[in-house]
Length: 253
Ligand SMILES: NC(=O)c1ccc[n+]([C@@H]2O[C@H](COP(=O)([O-])OP(=O)(O)OC[C@H]3O[C@@H](n4cnc5c(N)ncnc54)[C@H](OP(=O)(O)O)[C@@H]3O)[C@@H](O)[C@H]2O)c1
Image (cartoon, rainbow, N blue to C red; front, side, top):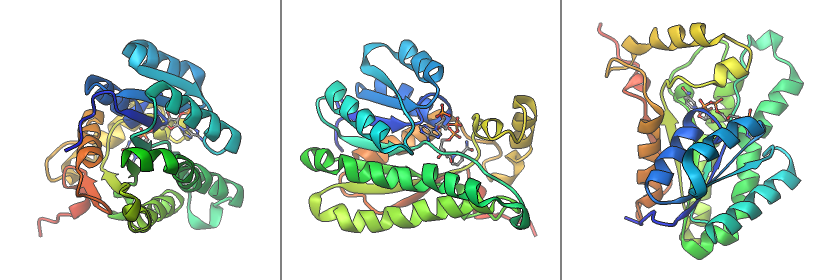
């Protein structure tokens, strides 16, 4: 297993939710973490909480110039790059006849294309460290939720492309893996304007009994799985469910 002491890790969308949880976890592991996000106040708060080993870079990963600036800052902060965690993502829901093309393009831009472009951009740096790329997919590719086709389609793309990149980058000794988290309470639905905080929490808690382990997950539990995949030297192309058994679709029939 690779050590994370002083390892440079770039986490997109590190100002909240799973990205924030990963930043906390990896700073505790001794890594040099760079986070990015569009809202300055959110990433600044995380960096302030974590101290000098976490650098916050404001930027939108759907903008090429921002991506370059974020990567340059991570390279400088961590003296190279060992892992890219393509975590930033957005939710878009609606019944098929209501979907708007503009919003579909937006969600594919942030959830799929930006991570692909970042993977290409960081490639020379990851090759030097024989590093790793993590894509955050979703249990939406395991459980069909009516109304969630835009999000599920974007996550299916992420899941598929991560395996192709694993094959493509294996000869360069870069590992590429994908995690499918189950339900974790974050801001994703609230930012999309779908629910307020209280309703979002109730809704997720209501899913607890559909997870065979009887509860929703935590940010830390997702971060621990990311840690394994970043450190494991002979694991690539894996699609790992970290979902309390939600994706099993268990039926007590
Ligand atoms: N929570 C769950 O149950 C769950 C389950 C499965 C998968 N996931 C996935 O986990 C990942 C993290 O989501 P989360 O649940 O932690 O939600 P979250 O708290 O809303 O975090 C997503 C972060 O991404 C950032 N972001 C979005 N678009 C961006 C862009 N264009 N440029 C830079 N940053 C951007 C957001 O910050 P700004 O708005 O400030 O940019 C936000 O901090 C997502 O890929 C999501 O699809 C979540």
